[in-house]
Image 1 (cartoon, rainbow, N blue to C red):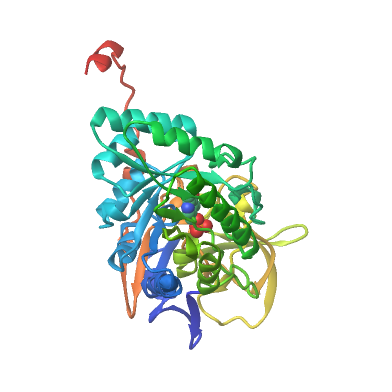
Image 2 (image 1 turned 135 degrees about the vertical axis):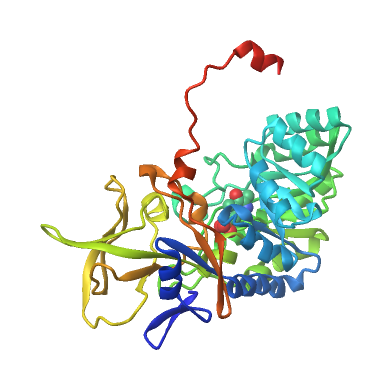
Length: 426
Ligand SMILES: *Cc1c(COP(=O)(O)O)cnc(C)c1O
């Protein structure tokens, strides 16, 4: 993980995390730029065996402009799932020629925006979406380059809420309908058939599901070739897991690339990969202050100032995040249920977690919080969104300030009656 002790202080690169906490207040997210860059380079090096591979960062993992910008500066493309994410990627400097647009519910207005921007590829997930895209493109006199996202019906062996490649999931075109769907795509105005795509799930810790899916993909590409459809791009999605717990060893980027080369290398198509978590997850921590230590009937509660609305992964996916004090001073360890201030019993980061003893005012870090952390935050219980900081070498800088309570409350407006007729004619 991105934080290690030096002389009793938990450091990220050359910066004491306790210093960040005292300057910024808590809770606060911190990301190591060096760590993000290293993860990107690991992909780049690994996939050098498949020249031309496009690394499209799945920006939903962390959409901060500084994070996308760091990756864009290294040459990354982007995988986006909404107009908002597309706008963020463009603003952070990702070239349109490296942007793919995924998602099951693209609206015509979003398609129009992406078509006008001139993105590289739409990953289409259903026949109705294909028809809608054709209609929008034809109306604009533009052409949409598409890949069909197919559902290979493989079990990613991950948490059910982040498995996306089984037939019961909402994602992708059913395997048996894919061939017919390609024929349909070939007949539609405004559509240029370019590739095939899949993404079977997130936080994968074994290569086996990838092997199954890549093999199926290779079969499909061969079948399509029989139908006279020659694909230029093969998008194998993201999903590579990270080590949230000590002792977990996820497959390396190199092993993933070797597998892709073995299964797909001979197909003479440009490979696209869409890593999210594995680029940014390990690079981030969430810092929080212990507010109270409360002895319950049967357990001790460590009550902290971060909550489920700031980092929802434990509540939503039963996810494990390592916890470390920012200063090593306690010698005794103790078991705590680590909980936040939100009025929900689900606001629990960890149960019976054995960590060095803490007292009120101590600071802790949740590790592995760089992906699906800040982006999934909300303001439930009228809590302010958590600020974000990027660390590079000995320096740190704010990349999202903490909003004020006026910002939060000011999102609401006094009740105003809307004149429906005027709205329609406007
Ligand atoms: C979420 C997502 C990704 C990224 O998944 P990670 O597990 O974060 O690597 C890639 N592609 C698509 C289509 C996605 O929805």
